[in-house]
Length: 130
Image 1 (cartoon, rainbow, N blue to C red):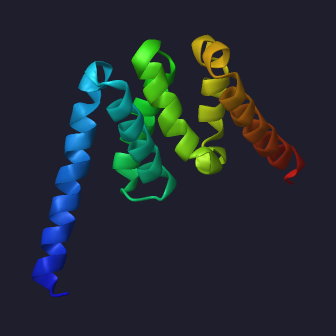
Image 2 (cartoon, rainbow, N blue to C red):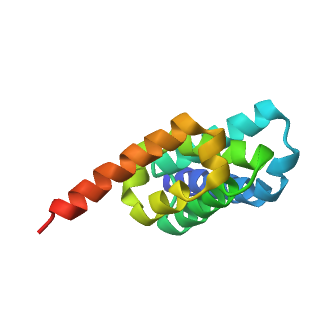
Image 3 (cartoon, rainbow, N blue to C red):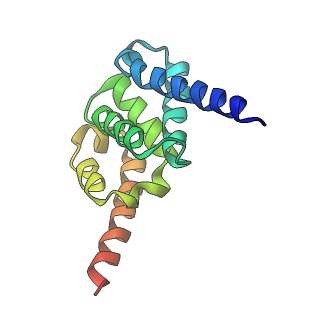
């Protein structure tokens, strides 16, 4: 692959990510199938570290904001969160935030339990650290 092709590919990827982030405000209007696919895509991008740290922070912010809501946005947040549960321990304060979300807890009890278990692992590690 020549440098020009690589730059073009990176530019296309950046454009796709920015468009995905710009679409956030319209997720509430998405049909269920598309909402689920978009949530899974969003979460997979976070899980696999496919964006730089700034875009990752923005993506996480959107997921955590969605988890505070109800209806479609809460579902979007849950679809995304399921994809990057393994990385959640990297953000202990986010675990605490999620565990204080009553709508999330009552609607997604199993996923809430997984977040809680992740949180317990992080707490144990920090408590035993010198």
